Each structure stands twice: as C-alpha cells, then as structure tokens.
Length: 386
Image 1: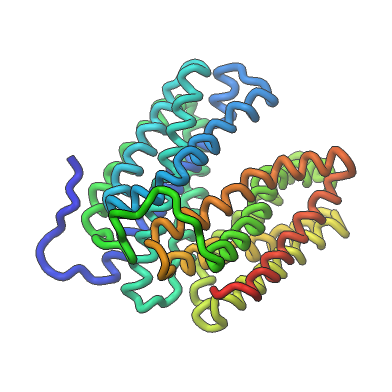
Image 2: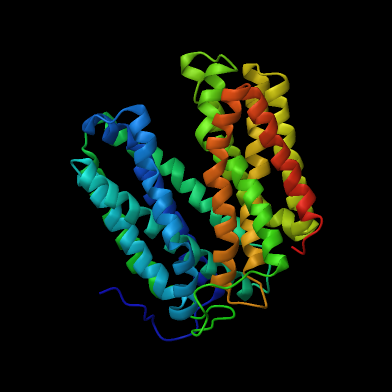
C-alpha cells in the first residue's frame, strides 16, 4: 500500500513542486511509451492501417466517459488521492496493453488507459494549481507541462532501444510501469494535501460560467492546432513538402522540440508580459508558422513554420489551465474538468476535420484553416480574463 504520509515537519514549496513535477514526468513517460510501440502492436496483431485508426479511438472513448467523473472525484476525494490511484490505473493499463494478444484484450485496456489518462490529467493539474498557489500565483504551470513533453523524448529513446534489442512490448511496459510505481512511492507523500476551493458536496455536473467557457474556447482552438500537428505533420511533409524519406518525420520532431522548449520559458514570459498577452502572441505565432508552411512548402521553410507552431502552442494550454484553477465559483478540479472537456473536443475533432477538408480540396487548404484557429486563440484571449 502506497502511503501518503510524510516525515514530520514543514514541507517546503520547492519540495511540493519537485514532487508534482515528477508526477508530470511519469505520466508523460507512460503515455509516450505506449505511443512508441504502437507499430509493434499493430504488426503483432496484424491490424490494418484503417483498422488501427478505429482501434485507437478506444482511448478518447475512455477519456470522454471519464471527463465528468474526474472533476467530481477530485472535488469529492481531493486531487492527492485521485492522482495516486489514477497513476496506478494508468500504469496497470499500460502493462495490459503490452501483454494483450488479441483485439478483445487490447480494446478494454485502451479504454481503461484513456480513463486513467484523464483521471491523472485533471488531478495532477489540480495539484499544479495548488503548488502555484504556494508561490503566490507566480506562473509555473508551463514548466510542469514541459516535463511531460520532456518525458516524451525519453520514452521515444527507450522505445527505440527496446525495439532495436527485440524486447517485447509486454516486458518493455512492465519495466516502465515498475519505474512509474517507484517514482510514485517516492513522490506521493510530498504532493499538495488540500485543493483550492475543494467541495465534497460538489454535484457531478456543473455548468461552467462565462469566464470558464471563454477559457475552454481558447483551449478548444489551441488543441485543434495541436491535434493537427500530432496526426498530420508527417503526412504534410510527405505529400505537400515532398520531403525525402529520411526527412518525413522532421516536421513532427521540430514541432515537438520547440513545444517542449517553449514550455520551460513560458512561465518566465508570462511573469513579465502577463498570461493574456503571452496567449495572444502564441496564437499569432501558431498562425504565422502554419501560413509559412502553407504558402511556401519547401523543406526549409516548412521546418521553420513547424518550429514556430511548436513555440506558439507550447504555452496556451498550461496558462489556460492555470487560469481555470483560480476559479472562485467552483473547485479547481471541477473548473479544470470543465475547460479540459471543451478543449478535448478540439483535440478530437481537429484531425478528422483536416482529413475531410483535404479530401474536398487539399491538405494545404486544411492547414490554412488550422492557421485560422491560431488567430481565434488570440481573438478570444483578448475578450477573456486570463
């Protein structure tokens, strides 16, 4: 049994920050470890490209089902307890994915993986809001998300090593899960014990106020852009940029690199310019990068454009989550769940919309449409209190 008790004496805010930062890293490691072995699982089970697309919908299905539950559980039980059990569920589902031998085993594990991912997303961001409160609301949220992104690079490197040495996904994921549990044992007791605005009597469904709806709209537009880059950057470089085989993945790598780097600098920038101005600039940077890649789709200019998009998207969601967690009308967990729910639909709808528009016109037109979402981020931020 993992204990939440800590040694007697006052825990410094730096210790809380390190503990919560460790949780962000562990969660990013869990998600990216699965992503690194999707081709291996596809090959082992003989799943077609079209079939894989349908199978992977099980993860957002689990996230969607648990969206209202996550905020309610955090409000009722506290983010400290929910993040503990959420991480354990997430790690257990990862192990299940590695040892699944057929679709009947894989699909339920993917749904549970989605549920665990969403429970941990809401609870760990609520923890981050609590740490930010200890710093007198000094912006530090983006650095936590930067650790999540950094974990993606570590997971990709570990995944490449495992594939290169013919290590089965089951053994790989068992190793990752053991590391996650060990990290949880060390850090769990040093997390923030009480949430901002906690209310055990909070109803499971709460209508968000105008400010939270505005923050949700910003997250919706920003996550459309993120979803497009995650799912379509490789295709864009292959079919529009006409990059050589070795350079097809360069756009995605460029985007992910500057997204991670930008998150470590976003807090410093928000502290000097203010969160609203940073979000406005981020939206303009995202739109500019996409338009560069659309108007001049050569290898060099497209790489430059994708680098700018990474910087542009890096700060928006962390700063929006930070603002939502300061809501005075509902608990931090419920406020985060409300904003996250609206943003989630942007992440979910963005990639298929690009496909539909590309089918009706071209992929360049699709990316130009996504550039408009970047402009919408700036426009909505100018009208919402951030």
